[in-house]
Length: 302
Image (tube, rainbow, N blue to C red):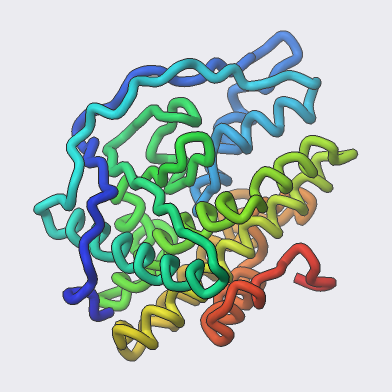
């Protein structure tokens, strides 16, 4: 992936080496979610989760009509601006490129793109969606419009999930960031609030999960739109890049992750989509290069 010419974003908060305060309270026991369930949800959220608090809170509401209590969190006292280390520089470059791409896309329809902030952290972090640990994977918090990323996930992509190898991992890593930015685009377009409302009104966990799958596959598709637009303008893709992204999408499909963890799959518990679905929707966005191609909510078959 050619990213040296990308503009570096200033919307970076570098919190590596230190965590913030706050967090959220989880009702454990007494009819609430058990700690084992919370751990499982955290593992599921590892695969490019939208927000661990939403997953856990949604499960709690469906379980007994409860809720996740959101505590106040510390306002930003983090280092801002483009980091100087190589990994931080890469993240700032990719985020800057997504800003330029989505600014242009929104302008085409007479809208204004308001970029998210991205917080780099190590181990654990707290913010608008509460307390999170790196085991939950990258996620977008619609409450404070931030993406949270522990870059150790990039290493896990190569070692644990075997989602990519060599230099092609750069584009796979960019795809991870673009997926989370896709959730921000959904938020700006009003899709996330509608999806959350539909999940809360769902008659079962399986139905709520199916809505979540459509949310995640749309974010994959929007990541493909970014890749298309970026390549057209900056010629950013190199041979093997798209294949690496598809390999990563396959490695973090619900069916593959469940098969590896349990030895079997439970389709009604899927929250992100199968490997084939994730690959298909990324390629749909990449081939079409437009948001209208990413309407997973009207798709008869995912």
